[in-house]
Length: 131
Image 1: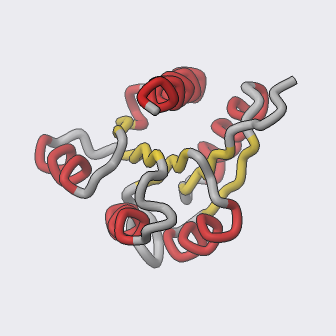
Image 2 (image 1 turned 180 degrees about the vertical axis):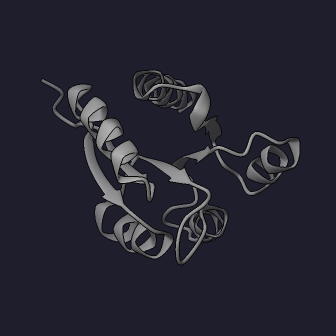
Image 3 (image 1 turned 90 degrees about the vertical axis):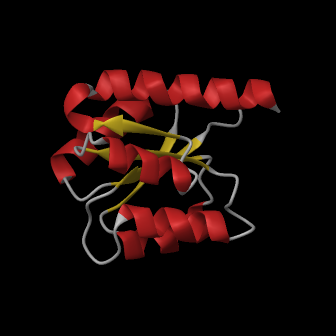
């Protein structure tokens, strides 16, 4: 058993999607927490201190791009892996996501929860090999 499981925060307002992701990440041995809007996400980040954040762009209260700005502006969270989730697959959105410092982004419509989990594991593994 993994002594130090990675912590993942799923920030998404589609509860059905969150449930599918959570089940998949739990099976993969991650410790998962969820937040349904940007405001809750910022609170959870402070108390849960996730290793990886899956962050939806279109959300109530504070959108994902603003949450990402705040994550990158905070010295305690600026290096946290942040994978943006979006259904917006335009070049301008991709450019904005990278400009704000996201680790990666996933177009939700293009991936199953299993593929998302595998992609997240790969990104996490890649980040560890950089250290």
